[in-house]
Image (cartoon, rainbow, N blue to C red):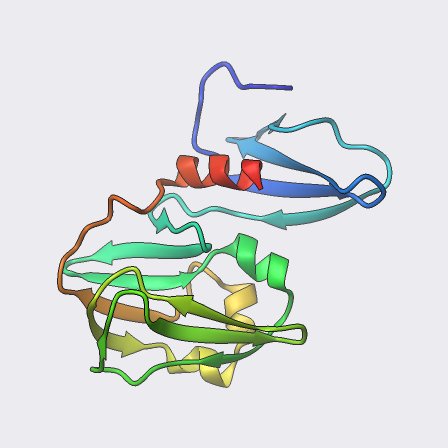
Length: 175
């Protein structure tokens, strides 16, 4: 197992899956240098690349949260976008509606499944990104930029249950 001498937040991740043994590796890119977090890649591997944005926090259900003033912009991590496949449809709530913790905020449909995402916060849905309803490819192609889903104004801003980018990378390595 390769462990970098100095821990730096990775700028890029590559997930390697060996088809025969179902082994999974994550390669982390540290400012131009690659380090293998788990295992050594073999010849028969499928390579899937995704990135983790530095200026966000992450949930264990692979959503990113970016704090802006008293609001939280929420989207799907590139990891999940790659894992679930092509997003065919995004179902958004109405803006200005109240949302309760644990209730579904939005859902994403792929060819295989419908994935609903519960809210970690109670609050008001301040904005929705109607562009992802019109063009759901934005979720896959621009997860951290144009593919954001909703903005909420939480009643209480408690981000302790969210993961920092490096913690999220560790979480992904354990999957």
